[in-house]
Length: 249
Image (cartoon, rainbow, N blue to C red; front, side, top):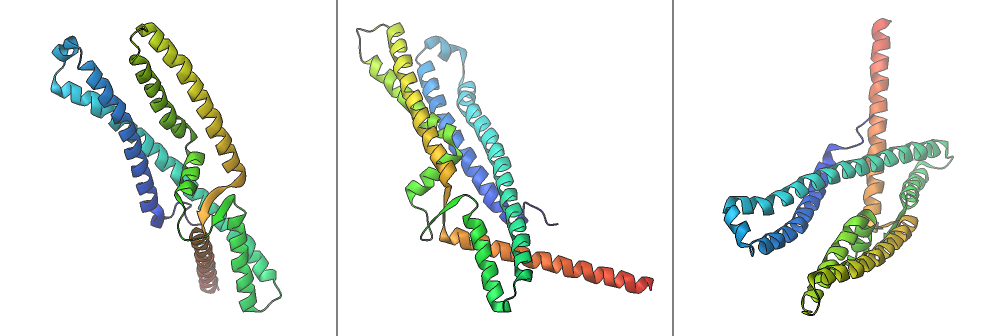
């Protein structure tokens, strides 16, 4: 049996992991820079640190986030590729049984087989969008379905920072009250964000992620290639067994 993580898809997995790591590294670097800037306002901090340590305070959290998230994304994407390949193999085996049992001409049977491949893709929890490219809101919906907690962080962290920034302009409030207001309003905003995003994720889980017609055709072609490869391996195995039997006789 062939591998469930084919070599020809390694670039796809690597690019996905790299993009994920870079995005998360940039997200961590921004607050690290802000924290360093705030710390630089303290003369004692400036006296106790040098430029090497300050640079490390900004770069190391981002590098850690890059390494952790890219590795996690690669593992997750490899599992997705394995599931897609396994689905393709099982669909091919199912359609091949139907193909052999069909009492129709060869051309019609092949057309019916291709349609069965297509139906197996459509029934795998996806929604097909016309055209060769997804619209931005389709991509956003797919991203939200796969990364709900990142979306919550991307909305929640700036919201809390903006709330605190709004409190700093009110001189009549003490620092304790500013922090208290930030916590109360920030908690409310995070809860609302959490409920909204998880509701959207639940809708996407039930309806399926968006893919294009081109992706459907690509999966159908991959299934046809998988079937051809299986038939070639079966023929090769049969020839090897026949040769071994001939040598023994």
